[in-house]
Length: 240
Image 1 (spheres, helix red, strand yellow):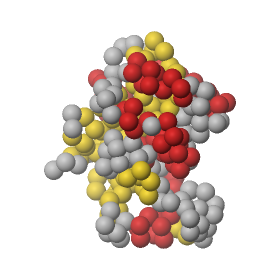
Image 2: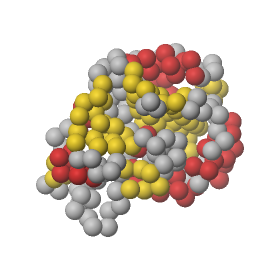
Image 3: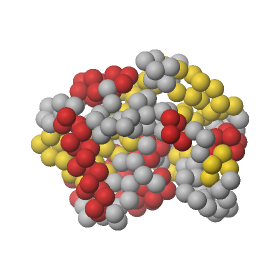
């Protein structure tokens, strides 16, 4: 299995696939042409949005030179066929969205177990990348979550990586939620004994042949400290 754990594969400010840090090149190397794709939703009940974002992603990839025999959507409409859809797929895209909502769907259908024997390509987008971790760091996103004592910040994930990702640094830096700064008051204190990779759009973690490397600009939050660890264009092995 080859995995691309992205903040966002598109943009900035465009629906086109972002070529930064070799993303398009590496994805072309990893996929057959044409291929069969499956996009796994973030909200299994929001059928219209799932269809819209899947069609948009397919069009973006086609403009980047990819082609598809099929491009299916996995939500509650197709959940009974999830095993067969995964078995035939060359590319599985894990959509962005609200992390806990997507996580609950993944757990309900047993997606982690179904992916255990998958030998294709996985592309995580934002929440999809976050939920790919063995133990997911689900920082508060919506009003009320940061001060809710019952909100769970650590969830069981798909187990595709040990890396915890906080995406969209280019847009969420300075975010205040429930009166708390997302980084200074939430993520940094939560990092005691843990590591969070903070990625702007255009950066990603590439997992291939049992090895992982960070591509592009990134910060690391660990043990109450946040520091920049790479620049755009850098390739940083994470296994050494």
